[in-house]
Length: 239
Image (cartoon, rainbow, N blue to C red; front, top):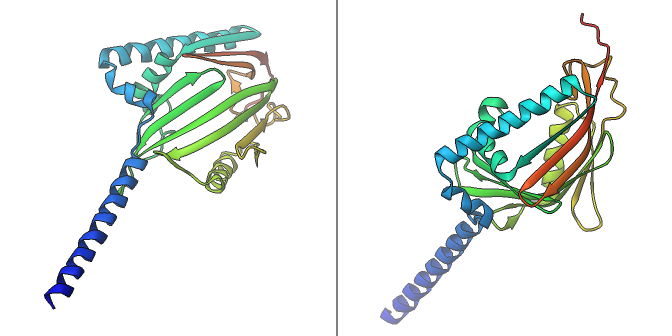
């Protein structure tokens, strides 16, 4: 009898150990921090605040150009973007970051944007991160390629991503085609050339101070993002 009890105890301990290892491995997997995200903790509050101010200053200068000129451009450093994400995004664009998400951060490589943030709903804690490419093949047409989306090191189903993106763009009334590429990536094609800005100027996201804004060029460089475009005066009539 004692022998069977000992065997049973060993089996229970072994199963418990296996369950612990699985749970520990799963926790490590979903809380994996990409290297660029781990570097966030080394930035001082004063530096973040200054980077945020530099981002806002560059954006203000760009908006002034849009209001006054036919062509505009802007350059942002990775540090400026991250300062704004850390300090000002909730103030400037409330609701853009979902509830339960914290400390968004980007890392700019050649032709690629890495994005990550802490994701902490009620029942678990993880790191959400993605790798994307963004191009403008012609003015008014925007391509976004999502290479991968993960929680820690665990890939998120592309079907889930496509469904969530479709719901978002449909609710925002933004024209967008979503499809899978031969490499298994997700491609978003936004063609805003046919938006009638005159008839729908109140809801058109590309109207700024009665000027039609068109993004014509995006350059993603290591540590730097360059934007360029045009601004055309449109005639609108208020109700």
